[in-house]
Image 1 (cartoon, one colour):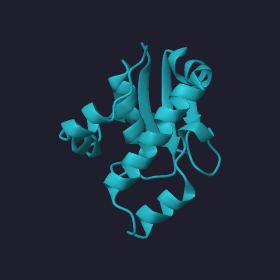
Image 2 (image 1 turned 90 degrees about the vertical axis):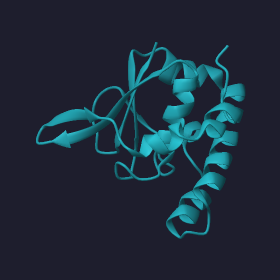
Image 3 (image 1 turned 60 degrees about the horizontal axis):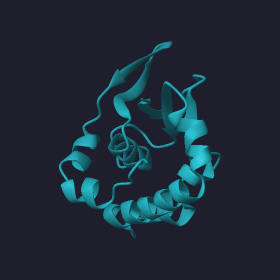
Length: 142
C-alpha cells in the first residue's frame, strides 16, 4: 500500500513526484489551457476535474507501467506542483483517485523552518463531500 502526501514544488525529498504541467510527469499533469482557465476564471473547477479525470483514466489504461513504477512500487510518494496549499489543485484530485485505488492519504507537507510537517488540508473536504465525484469518476485498480 502506498502512502500519498502532497506538497508544493519546493519539496526536495527522494519520494517527490513532480506533476506540474511545466516540468512534471506528463501523464499526471494537467493541460496548460486548463490551468489558465482556472486562473482566469473561464473554466469551472468541475469542468477541470472532469477533463483531468478523463486524462488520468486514459493514462491508467495506456501506461500502467509508469503508474506502477512511479506510484505503486513505492512505500510513499509526494505529489508536488506549484499551487499553494489549501486551494483548488489537481494534486488533490489525483490524491482522491489514488485513495479510491487503495492508497492512503497522509496529508499536505508544509515546510516549517528546515523541517516538513504533515497537515490534512481542508480543501480535501470539498472532494469528500461530493460522492458523485468519487463514485462516478473512480478508476478501479485491478
